[in-house]
Image (cartoon, rainbow, N blue to C red):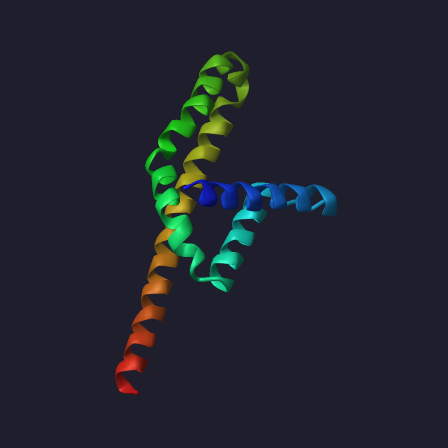
Length: 122
């Protein structure tokens, strides 16, 4: 677990450093996640190291939203005139995220079905 956490934090740090050094418009943790994906694809045995720790972290992901919720409630008065715009942005982005997730799932399902058929035909 320590090795997996070290790897996760290292790729996140690398993403933050690269983003800052290169002046990229991508958040550092997102770039770090892309680096992790590249590392997992390059060294498949890393999956076995990272997967158990990732499952634990994902299982407790809701805890990470508590500080954000407290921050919103703590500054609710500042929302004022922007409440409608913020609410609309949240609603639209939620719907878009669901649609993109569903389309991605369908695309991957089609791709895997094609490769399964090609394997059976070969």
